[in-house]
Length: 224
Image (cartoon, rainbow, N blue to C red; front, top):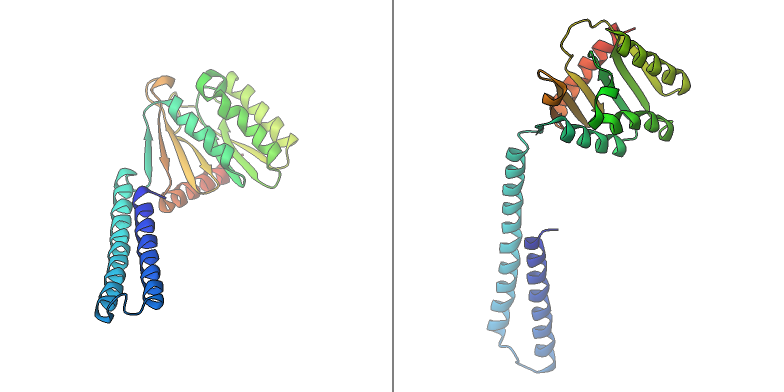
């Protein structure tokens, strides 16, 4: 609750208390308040309550519009991969239903020191959320990534809710990788000329989420 809501509540509360006290005094002491002033007072209090209630609706609408503009219609940008993976790690910790993940590139996660917590968390998530599911798509373009893929395959055999598939990817540049969390948000990693130039984008509007979800399912269908 923000300060304005509190002020409105206090104002209405005080106005009602005053109205009750005046009514009691008028009952105890005859003609404490002349009838014409009593009616004026009641209408004034009702008008005050109505004014603040309408003003609150107006302010909430304005705040909602500002939030929509600030969030760029459901998009949040991360200027470096440290901030990106920190946000992604927190999102995974808060999820319980489904993780749809890709790691299609030339570098295994062990080369990403700042993302280590996130990649270690995935196996822990599988343990703690047996009713949830993880689907991950990877690639094996070199011996390092093949070793990582074999480890992922071992995890898929170890946990019934962990699924792993591989796609062909022999390009020197990485795929645009993603993480779809509980179908509530999508994290996209966009790598520049090196690992440290990786930027990230988070989508949390349903239309974008549905589009990336369909794209992931399409990739999953072609993966082996």
